[in-house]
Length: 187
Image 1 (cartoon, rainbow, N blue to C red):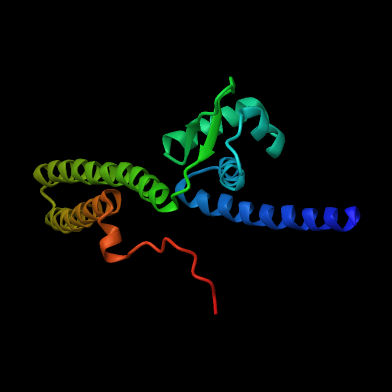
Image 2 (image 1 turned 90 degrees about the vertical axis):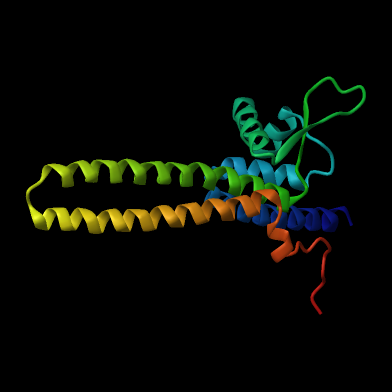
């Protein structure tokens, strides 16, 4: 009987590990390394908050890597400190609300890049205007004018994207696309 139970536990662990790998792969879309994604997956499926030593043991990685990973996940609001009476070591648990994690992660990543793109477009427009002012070449001046129009269009897109990011970050997105908070079994 113990042998059969061991086989079932092994199958259980392998099945969860496959899903944790999927989590890690998906998180890479947001600039999160696979090892940090795996760390999040392990914390998500942990029944109790974990210490850095427990994480290191579960993932066979260095304590320094675990500390770096926890710090990165904390900054993304995907992991938070936990407390247990009598426990002297730091404990951590995953943020259970994936909707909250997504809105925070999406907002942080996209806001930074979008703001940068708006600024870069403005700088490019400024430089192109200088080129147009200095040149006597009508063809070049026309090309610059057309490219400035394209850059203005890009800026309008980025401004729209900033509004979209606000809708996600503020939670307004859930007015349009409601959360599914409960497990809905397939029929």
